[in-house]
Amino acid sequence: MASLRFLADESCDFGVVRSLRDAGYDVIAVAELMQRSVDRDLIQQASTEQRVLLTEDKDFGWLVYVSHEESAGVILIRYPGHARATLPHTLLQLVQTEGEKLSGAFVVVGPGQIRITPRASVR
Image 1 (cartoon, rainbow, N blue to C red):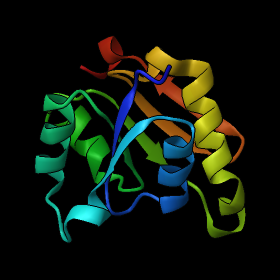
Image 2 (image 1 turned 120 degrees about the vertical axis):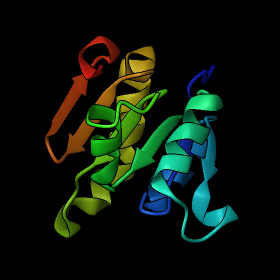
Image 3 (image 1 turned 180 degrees about the horizontal axis):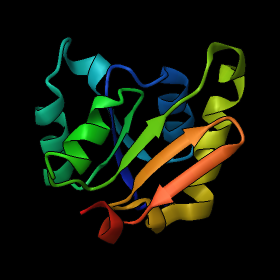
């Protein structure tokens, strides 16, 4: 059923992790394994394991676009505090409707907006 796999960095809202896991997705949450991870190491781990990285850290945009780090995909979450209640549902819906389009893409998700930049456009 759920072929996409995810790596959620420490900044990712844990409600997103729970929502995806409850729907049957394989999600590794860095917060459960370590503290103070290194961004470059995480994006490399995600790429090696073919996991889409879930983050709220804008530095991953720099790593993908400027440093040209290999990426299995990044979902950058840009949700302000007042809209966070809808975040887990929005992310789950995104994964279920867009599926494999997320693999290798750079995705920015905010309240009422989703921008998917395919792999070819990222390089």
